[in-house]
Length: 111
Image 1 (cartoon, rainbow, N blue to C red):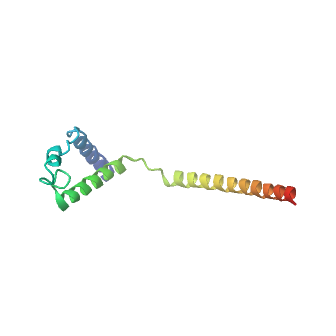
Image 2: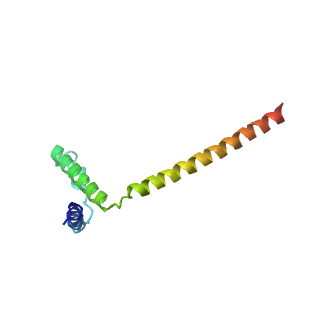
């Protein structure tokens, strides 16, 4: 197996593990709200390490999503970039000419 196929297989396994998890929403800490500051609640219970774990989990999920992307070949990327630049230059020239002609027309009407 090539490295790319291995990574895709690993990302599929990770995605399945993430999607098979418990999707139920976490209840808020309503009892601690009633009693004031008695409990920090689930948001602060992990502290810095909880935050680091959340960042690691997020970055892992980003990696899994990036592995799902079908990137264009170099030839396709160059062709599409050229098309976008050509269209941009065309409309720039067109709108520039319209602007100049309308400016001259309005200045002719005023003076």
